[in-house]
Picture 1: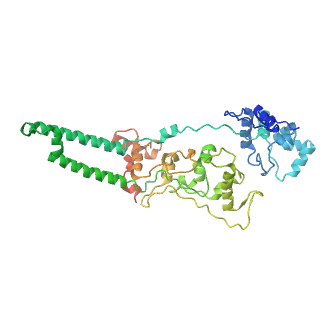
Picture 2: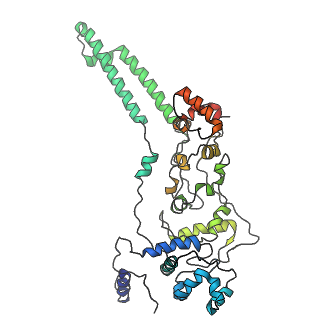
Picture 3: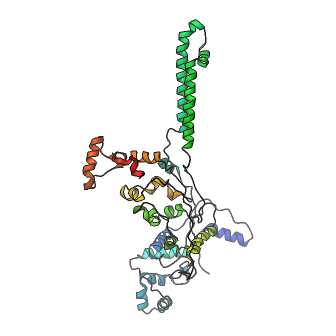
Length: 417
């Protein structure tokens, strides 16, 4: 019988209950305790083996899941360490395996005995699901959301100021005229001509202000989150897998636009990643997410069984829906902000590494850009060519570091030319 050291006590209890026709005991909420060597072995696998092998499924080399059941562990250690030396020693099995594979396996003499032990543990157990805990978002909110005074708060203060002014005027007028007319302050408040004129002015100005404020929200699409043709998760790619934004949006550092990556960029990784094995999200099953990867293959014509492009296949573009869209008269240059100013992508696009479905995070209004220019300090002292300009501006404004606004970032022609 095959040994199963990866089974926990609860797993064995469930198996015995199943053989008796009983229902399995509910699993505890805590994660299954796993040998830390398994996780270390996974890291060694990703760093050294993942280019040619999958844990499950064939790549250039055979799948490695439970390879210890097919080959002797001591033989595997020698094979991984230096397969060429093992073949040269006259080992019959090593010679057969070497001749059966078209590509020669790379020896790994740099791996320690402990590294190889951990690798074999990982091959025996595979990817063990961990109990997930809710991701705290308070830090993100604190980092990115900086609420100001607010429209309704400002309106409330304005109304209170108007009421206070009216009471002062009514009290002053009532004190002067009460001896002659005997009118109360409340009556003065309602029938005083000046107060009625003041109320009319307040209503007209307040109405114009509210109307203007409402008109200013047109085409400000914060939160816009369209359904894309492929369920691409930034949280999985940029968050879990730590893929740099500019790996996909490579033109952001060199040109005006950040660019939409072609499906061939996706295929740099997905030639070997044909299924999803991470935490599920958005109510999707593993089968649902595997189908999303298949959509990329359908677009480029990739045969995942034979690991090659289909000859004569007519490729179909992925029709992504644009989310961030500036007006035509706005000239925004990504390279100037990303490369020259060193602005992080999250500054404008929010914490994309936490978003499964991408959405518009910032308002992208003129006022929002101007506020950023007013608050962003620019240090030119590291560049000798601009140091003199920086020193002159710093002396002019009486500061150590000038802002983008002080360097001309508020000039109309900088963005509208």
